[in-house]
Length: 233
Image (cartoon, rainbow, N blue to C red; front, side, top):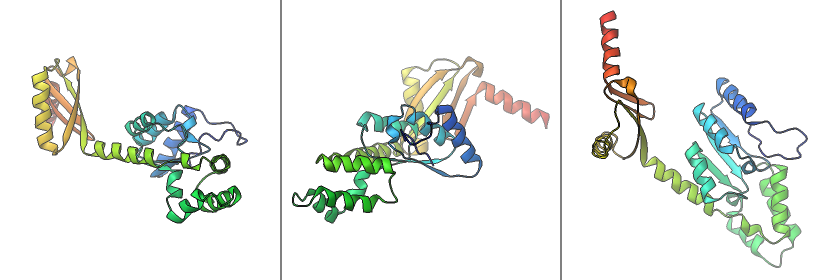
């Protein structure tokens, strides 16, 4: 699922809310993975929002793209939105024999297009195949580069070596308090912790910390709520 950016495909594109509804329904039906392909999904300015929604629904997300329009900044935004995997068409031309054929000036463009068409038969849409044909026709097949995919994987590795902590406190934390809290959390989780904090006066005192699915409630409000539950038993 997830055929995005299929301009001229004969059917109108779903808008952002419609795609969100589709993703939510898929998750409810037990789907665990969603792939965004096309056409070219990167032409949609809401791609990051759709990836973020899919991630919120607990879906593993994969993007298959020609790489056209994929900058380092866009790759970073997709990563921050929660994209799990990115596949560039470069992965389809990594084979050394195929690369030799594509780089051989003695081979005709038709030969090169036929070799790529055979390789992409069940891996890319007709729109993407036409794009690759155009790149071959203009001698720009080298424009499909794996460098951005490599950069995306590097971003992912960096993110996996750290964790985000969202801290709510009754009063604004000082720089020293934030640093001390960060050190405590890094000791607890065994990796770098990125701390962001907000003020929530309803906590009365103390802090509430959310790290992934775990919530550490050391607020006065939390303790009062716990005490109330104990008294009700």
